[in-house]
Length: 255
Length: 280
Image 1 (tube, rainbow over the protein chains, first blue to last red):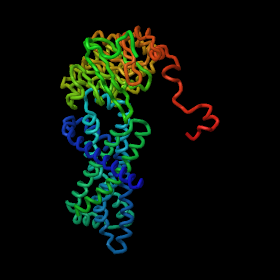
Image 2 (spheres, rainbow over the protein chains, first blue to last red):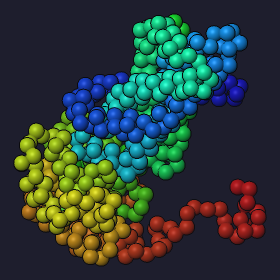
Image 3 (cartoon, each protein chain N blue to C red):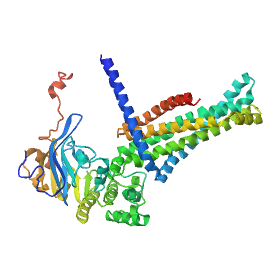
Image 4 (cartoon, rainbow over the protein chains, first blue to last red):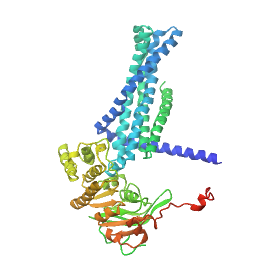
């Protein structure tokens, strides 16, 4: 009986949290148009979430592309079609690996920074001070950071895929001896616009989810050192699971 | 309970903020029950009380950050219980608040911190914002620190910047949460003088929450002493100091034991040491 009661209670708590998150996201969306009227704030956040994540995104993209080149070459060699390596790498990166790995890295790099920054602002009364100055912290602090993440994610994913394709080319063509002409021409004829659209749609959705989760966790963090630490952990865990779940759903819809 | 001084909120006072029979509880625990306070216009009013009596909670009630579960909170003619978010924000533009640590925005320098409310609430050109900000910084003696970041300021300086920021929109009411906590004697003197000067020069009403009896005695025009969720004494600081009630005397003269016990409630000492009450 107590087990059932406990399950019901934890289910309720989970539902309440979902409700709070949904309401918070709706409020974010409602104030976002006004936040866009101050583009300098949003641009600053695109810089913080996007430009400052560039090195980790580019390095990871290069290595993921190189691994893809090695694995792809080995796999395709068994079927005697190594010249399709370019197509395989490009499709894998544009449709899946680019958006997903970028989002996971984003959650770890930019998401945690957002959560801890907003959480610490709350712990040091900066958000309360804004409220006391009749400035809505959701509009002034949360919305620009949310929009910055939504804008930065597709750009980062595009850069990730581009560097990844270069990495695959580096391994496949330069190291393994796949014909460069075949590599590029097969890729260009096989990759269609809808493949690119799929990647863009996914990365926008991931940007939305990761930024909303990071901002929500920061804003609702218990305003203590421990509370902010826990919120930061939750951001990474929740964002990662959300990205993978959304990825499956979008793939099922878009294929 | 009380005596010569007028505890509660006399109806005759020209009050800019008035709490009538206010109750507030968190998680079933009553913080206030039947609180009556009147903040007189133009005066410096102190709210005192031992730690944990809800002094900061009282400020949050007056500023509308939380709502009373019973009773009436009226500030500058507006019933806080009836205001929506927009109404509350409009009211807060007539109030300034100083948080204990200043609560400066850490990503902006001193100048931008003071300019922040102006930029958020007006479309004034930079040519006008500059002089306004510099005048407020000059008033707190920190015009030269305009380009420092909050992390480079001492505690006293941060509080003075926060004061400049709080008065930049020319509020009617200025609220200080523990403005003296952790200041060295010089900074403390500066902050005390600034509170008095600001109040008188700008024609404000100031509410100061503090438990520094000595400082409040020199600064405030009126004081309320809170304990156990109620006002237990009110009047001028001198009247409070002369109040014979044991709980008031204990607080005003800083005695370790008295009606507010030194010991947190605990099982019998001897019994616990001998292991008899260990399980309880």
